[in-house]
Length: 314
Image 1 (cartoon, one colour):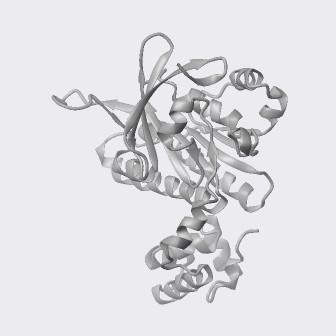
Image 2 (image 1 turned 90 degrees about the vertical axis):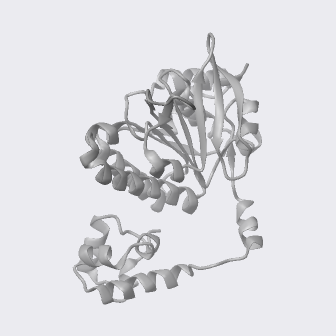
């Protein structure tokens, strides 16, 4: 159930309504806000805002905890098979809950296909590499194809109709709509209406790049992107679900040494993603997945292919 923010000192019905309208819907969102931001939103003094924030932090018992306790919590982490045993090993058993996994690369490198494969495999039982849960798929580039999902399901001996019923798809038409859809997923999770264990955003940066073109809008774009990613990570942590996002790449023609392409989204996205993979086209239907950033796994790369089953080892 959603947190009752009206229990906080200084938050009456009208103040609570103002806060909820702009996304301060629970203790955590208030606890991590600044006094200035909260005061401007709720139309209260900075002193009152500080009291509200402190009360929210007290409710959550925010602070230090032992690494031993954190290790115990990490035992709840779940893994979704990618379909490729080699890619699973690269990521440390598969795509993890409580984390954001990002794949960037050129068009046709397999980023969307991994998202579609995960949308099927997450519905498998835990002992078969899934989480027995449903999917929220935010489609920003009109890439979701139910026919392809049904094909993958059939090849994995799953009921295509049941698999499709467990995937909630929404097309985002601009960056604000994309952020709104993530908030809608958050509401579904709060109301405990659906057992969503995977959120897919394909792609994360497309609308932000087109809506905020030019250096003059870079700051606003990055702030909104940061807020969007923060909500996704918060849902991953709070509800023990996995987040998989795809990302575009930009050419770097001035690069004399090193990579000639870099991921869009800048440092904001680079720091927000827990696991980052770079997908590269290879010969025929083969692709390369290169792990370039991870908190617990070494850098490395594996070869995979796209088949009727989705993602598979070569």
